[in-house]
Length: 356
Picture 1 (tube, one colour):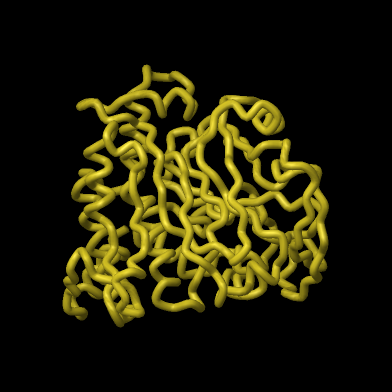
Picture 2 (tube, rainbow, N blue to C red):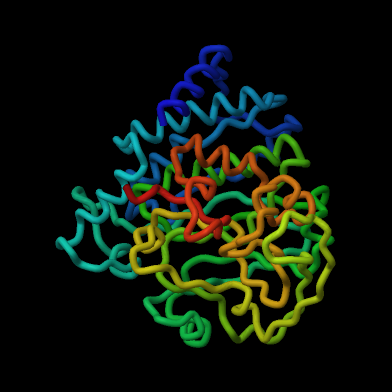
């Protein structure tokens, strides 16, 4: 953390602060192209959180350089932490747990309905800009406190946002034809300004540099067990499959996968002590593509090739490039390189506020 703070201070010192008007527009200088900024859907119920999310919104101005964008990002990180009154992000976990009786287990279905001192709800819905391939299809996601994701997929207990589905890898990798879209996801209101900031930073990089467009098709933050509906019917999708499970070889073959429904691709259940159950963790592009070897983003990968993030991203744009993890570390999040579950199995799509 000291190194990160020192690095930010150095960058801020050698770069003149860039101050742009709130109404500035995007890279092509056309006001009608102003991108969508993150927002809290329940702004009337959570006015303080909604205001903070607006305050930390990033600047879009003609011809901003990469360095200027970084400086603006660092400034908004510092502002977000000042507004939240936190240093290390793990404090958000402790604050949230303090709402519960000592020793009580927790679930997002319970936590999200509680309120902070002052009346703000813990659970809110964040809407943020993302890049989506040209023919990406929006699909509703559902959440519940269930032991099996299949139960959520079959009963669809509570709508909790949406994800995007793309069938072919050619579309996933066709960045020139991406379109700006939105995604909705539930989040702890104390984490919302930071989550919004990271998602907008990822989007904004692609706004200025099409080569840096990352298709965020699935964003999961606050939930216990989730899935899309099992009623979608059978679906085919393309994915890469590698020659081994734990090597570094980057040669992959394109595989046509068939699934009984989209729920088989979009589902998950978080561990009882997971930060997701407190609304304080992010899974970015976490899919379940069974039938391939270490292919399109695996929940937990044992392959050494997964450490070559940029090469994986070039093969399949759904894989997050290294600079996304760097940005998350600047924010203060715990990133996959920080820990392993066992051996060298690493949960690559997951970042969070830490546990200690």
